[in-house]
Amino acid sequence: MLLLPPCAAAQEKVLIGVYHGRKITRLTLSSHESGQATVRRALLKGKVSLTAAGGRLRCADRKSLDGLKEIKVSAYGSGIWLSGPGLPRRLHRGDLAISARGDRIRVTATVPPEIYLQSVVSYEARDLGSPEAFKAQAVAARTYALTKVRNHVREGFNLCDTQHCQFYAGFADINPAAARAVMQTAGEIITHGGKPVSAFYHSACGGFTDGISAVWPYPDAPYLRTVQDGPAARPYCSEAPGFRWKKRLAFADLERALRRGGWLKNGEKISSVSVRGHGRSGRPLKLAVRAGGRTVEVPTSDFYHAVGRTLGWTAMPGNLFELHSGKDHIILDGKGAGHGVGMCQWGAEGMARKGFNYREILEHYYPGARIEKIREAGKKK
Image (cartoon, rainbow, N blue to C red; front, top):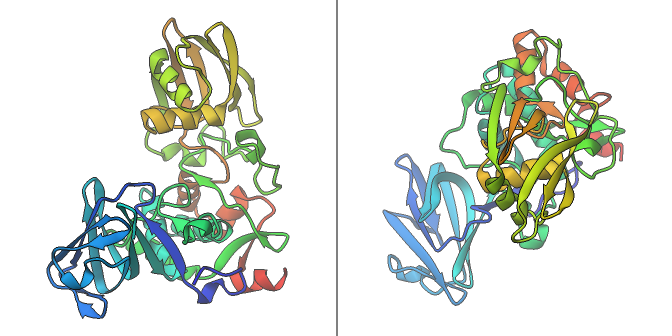
């Protein structure tokens, strides 16, 4: 059953697309040593390896599964391991639906929202350490999931397991502090005007968060605006690893990234890159890329995502930087990491260390918003 509107969400389950975006050619199932799993009501023993061909699952290990379009797996206790060529090994609990899509396999997990959040908070906030920061992350992640719950309905599930929705990697490495934070804030979401907010969050803002319209082509939201992250000389997020960074990006690599993003044509060579304007947070608004005899203005957010998707997210950690252009490269001298909108995770950690509670943290990063129970927010609709 797909997750329902806020007033019913606490009673339902959420469907997660597992290994989303990956081409699954072979999937191996094996029970955890302290777990059990049933496949078509039969206890799973040892390993079962599945492939797909012509819209049917193929299984040499168990003839009863060979030729089916879909199988249902129920995992108890510690759960069941999933693995395969090019796939990270992951531990899952609850119900799984494994189906054939042509010569590929699709996996969907069904879990209660609060259990799903224990995994999300464990992985999205793996570097945090303070209980109040974990609670802030739990409430933000719950709100974010609620507003994005129809992201993949046309594909037959609610949310994917990638950062397109929120990172969900099963239950192999659940942080006890994250699990407690989810339980201690059960059902709490961030609202504005009685409705769930778009609870964006990022790693480290570098001293200032940014308004949403300055980063993406979305309408302004009163709770997503530029916020100073504590004292200018020592922002709350200044303890983040790699808070200050410097990166050198060769024009040849930028050409590859911008061609992939559709900003440059084949054969165009970059001759210079410069900044066009700054927002209230100090982030560049656009980058003017001179290439092939023309100038292309690329919004900084698009530039950041193009570089990250092509060169890796460590190539350009964030979008708050000063730019210096050389003959065949640029140097970015930056602070913080991530897109800069909404809650700063390391800022939440810094605030928690200074004695702020999770409600004060969330009210700081989402100004004018409130913390409410899902059912309370739903009644105000």
